[in-house]
Structure formats: structure tokens, C-alpha cells
Length: 536
Image (cartoon, rainbow, N blue to C red; front, side):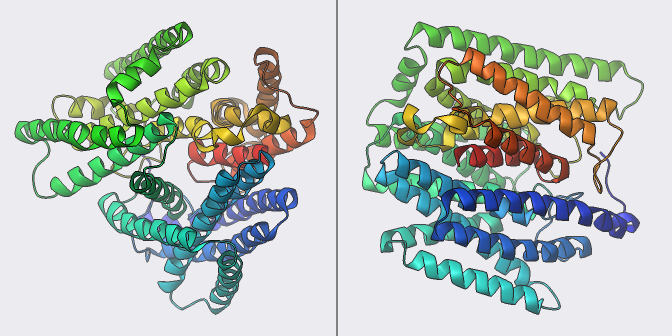
């Protein structure tokens, strides 16, 4: 894997400055667009947060270049604080707006809590960066203090006491997860990626605890996602702590790993889910998966695609074995095969049965994370085999001990299905550009990022300033997404764009520009920004 040499660090930092400015300009364009669409006191908070995050990001970049950051973050990328800081606040704002339009006050308040939580977590990350910067940046501290004061003042008069406590609970969980996971997993995240991933996990954990204590009734599908995500995170923290004191590669440790996995699954996760849905979780899952004939056909089709993906991995590793070079890596086009397979998986699910896709994606996430634990801890009998098979598909973003690219791909495709509350997405509230919300992952990652990567690496000649991305790749990405929207209109009768073509084109173009300039995980970031723009 290519790593940066120490003498080249200053030169790399200089090269990043132009791309950072362009990335910031794209993010500000998104923030101002949402601000214009929503236009209330919460949108002013988002603008203030973006300004302070822009200033603090440069302090994080300097800390990374000088090696003075608190934790070891992912190399060959900037801090990414600005684009990551705006995801949860903007998502909360558009969620509040849509649920208000749909006449759902519960989820309208939920959107406000999401926005407030995102702002609180982002402000904490900014305070952390400023607190360890030497010398203390006076101007940046003043701007951050002013923005934080405005946000706290507005939110103080907008949130109830219970909602304030909920925000503080998420912040507390976020602080502890930062200290634990960033210490155990060095070089796996940039500061922005850590903010986005750990902030989302903290919110999910808090929601699960809240719903468990209040005995609230809800859709078992939603509870299934919450319990699975929290269960897999707790399993990872448990085994990471345990294997600090013992060798995980022995047969005794491997047997203990599998036994404890069964204990945690059968003794914690399943009873927890049973308490929430008031039904046997296994029987509910089986009845849900095979409820209709359409679901059986979809499951058979997805099983076939999964088999094809496994055969691609085995075939590429067989080619590596026959290659004379021991450093053989799969080319970009080969890695994008999986993007095409994922697109072929998600489009039929979105068209024919979104609840099934919701649950199936959750199961796949649990399987991916479990296999990553097996690979990372070298659990017998599959640990070493997975290490060998997956090492072929590594790139510069997998610089830490974990391989997260395939998990990020699954998350990017699934988040538009998972995030938007179904009571706020009835047909009358999903007209125009909002009808494409479920397809945000397919468009941004499955089509846009794939086409940009393939055409940019094979035909691109004109590079965007300060990046390796090309103008040709970005233009073909936009064109491919427009064609995909036309095909969606043909095959999905439930989509009615209602003459909102200009907003759709602007959203696709903006996200494609963000893909060209960002150094963060685009599989995760791009679908979220396209989702936010389409929902607005």
C-alpha cells in the first residue's frame, strides 16, 4: 500500500489546500441551498456552524501535518471536519421540514433533536481541536465561541428539558466512543469520518436505550436495525478489550470467540429485540422474509448476486496467485464490479419491496461487520483466509488495521433507505425531487462514483486543480446519473418528478463536484449530501 514519506508531507499539505478550499465552497453551496429552502432559525444555526467548522478545519489540518493530533488519524487525507459537521444538522433540518409538511409532529421534533445533536457533537470536536492547538488560534476561538453562543441560545429556546438531556446523553456517549475506538483503531478514520461514524453510532445507541426504557411501540423493522447496529458495536468493543490481554490467533481464543458470540447473540441481542417488538425475533424474521412470493424471488435473486460477488473475489485472487508480482492489486475497474453488483441488488428492492430491502441490508451489515471481526482478530478457521482474499482490494483509504471500504459501500447505499422516517414519506410528501430520495445511494455511489472513477482513470486528461480527479470523470458521472434518473422514471411508476428537473440537476452536479474534491470516504459522504439536497 502506498504511504506518504515524511519529507513529502509539507508538499502534500500544500497540495491539499486548493482542494480543501474547493471542497469547502461546495459544502457552503449545499448549506446555503438548504438555508434558502428551509429559512428558519435552525437554518441560521447551520450557517453559523459551517463558518466556525471552516476555520477549525484548518487547525485540524495543521495538527495532522505536524503530528500533534490526539489520536492517530488516517493519512493521505485532510481533516474533513467541515463536510462531516454539516451532515447531521442538515439532515435534521430537512427531516423536520418534510415531517412538518406531512403533519407528523413527533418526527418533526425528532428532526430538531437530530439537528441539535449534530451541532453539539460538531462543536465538541471543534473545542477539542482548538484546545490542543499551539499557539492558541485567537481569531478562530472567537469565531467558534460566537457561533457556539448563537447555536446554544437558539436551541435553548427550542428544545424541551427532555430533549436537552437527550442531546447531552448522545454527546456523552460520543466522547466515550471517541476515547475507546480511536485508541483501539488507529489510522482508520480522519477526524471528520470519526465525527460522522461515531456520532451516528452514539445517536443510534441513545435511541435504543430511550425506546427500551419507555416501552414505546413501533415498527419491528426499525427496532431490528437499532438492535443489530448496537449489538455489533458492543461485540467489537468487548472483543477488542478482551484480546488486549490474550492472543486472538490461537484455536482456544477462536473457540472462545465463537462461544461468546453465541452468548451475546442469544443472551443479549435476541432478548433485547424480543422486549422491543413483543414477539419471538427469529419467528418474526422468518415470517417477514418469506411473507410474499415477491420476497422469495428477490431473496433468490440477491443470493445469486452474492454468489457472483464471491466468485469475482476468488477469481481475482487466483489471478494474483499466478502473477509474478507479489504486490498485485486489483485495478480500479475490477473494484467497481462490486458497485455494479450492489446497484443490481438495490434497484429491484427499492422498486418492489423497500421494507425487505431495509431488513436485508441490516442483515448484510451484521454479516460484514462479523466477518471483519473474524479477519481483524485472525479468528480460525477463516481469519487468515479473509485477510488474504480482501488484501487484494485494499486502497489508500484502508491504511489502518480495519478494512472498511465494503462496509462503507453498504452503508452509503442503505442510509437513504434507513434514515428517512416512513410516516413522513407518504406519496404526497415525496413528489418532485424528493421522489428520488430512496435512490440517493444508487445515484451518488452506485452510478456517479463508479462512472467517474472508471472514465476518469481510463480517459481523463484534464485534472481538477489540487486533485487526482479529472474533469472528464466528473462530467460523465453527471451525465450517467441523469440517464439513470430517466430510467428510474421509466421503470418506477411511483416516481413523479413534477418538473423539478433544475433542482435535481443542480443536486447531482453539486454532489459530483464534492466527489471530485473531497478526500473523505465518498461512499459514505456523497449519498448523505445527495439525500439532504433531494429532501430539501
